[in-house]
Length: 418
Ligand SMILES: [Zn+2]
Image 1: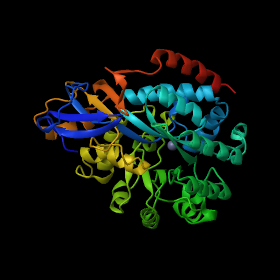
Image 2: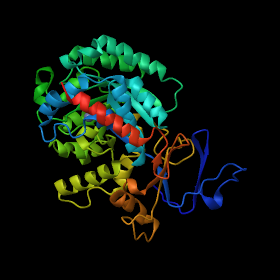
Image 3: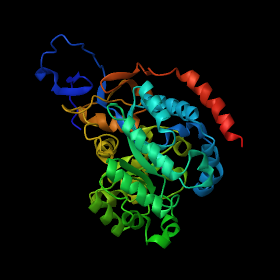
């Protein structure tokens, strides 16, 4: 998290080959030079999202989460076509990119449609196929068929620099034990990420109570917790759960805005970190968060944990910035992302520091707090993913946003009617 004045980053074939002070930079050898009059920083990483849910933004507002899922979200999701998912993903990706996000980790349906939107926008995603055992999703085929299709999607990701595949069992309460155990075995066999909601609902430990005393113990007994497992939320965990998570090397995605919107609770962030568990930040789906905005998430994490602990020193801006860059990369197993150093992929954001919410900046030490407390899409000028432009002067280079908005609007209206 060093801030250099007059820094240089050399990029070749999508990767960073040198970074440091301009005075020590190697000769560019006639390569193209891009001047960045502001701050160049790693693109942000969104650890847990269901981006195509922009199609459902605002639906079921104010309902308790169990009714919000079963009465509003799942019926709409059961009607989704791949074209709906691609349109929703494309619009959500445009929103993330213009908020300085270069990578998301997704749990959703129709992985190929999502991957097409990701590549068209020059974005990066780990796309985990979602599994839910509920009659609403009968149209997706049997669980075995869905597993086959997730594995063949994984095969189709080979050699594609910005898309990779994971397995996304929704939660221990939405799937049977046998299915969960099979997903764990498949993930191990194909070295895929397991991306699952756990310990989100206050009653979740009781909901899975017949299988073990806590949801974390149940998932562990089914072989689902490994260093390739990402737990979204992780609110209702006790010391024994955290000891298991540490032992297995599980990462956690903390979603403060979603947790506040749905009144789920306050994740024990300091305790998780004290146990040595990597915790990143995430927006969760746009139907929960409304905005795909990690600046908002960083500020919300600071506010939530300072207020709930009564300690204004409990988290620093640099801590939450790490949770959206290098720690997020490590949680997702993307070890060459999240830092502007040689050997890392060139996913970068250029922020305009002349925004009204940023001044006065008197020294480089003021920059990280300014970015975290005052940052917003207004400051995001350019974004590069894999060394290529994705946002130029505030405008995403993918499909035109006004056309995507109109398309999402009409698809959302169709999906809302039974
Ligand atoms: Zn979620």
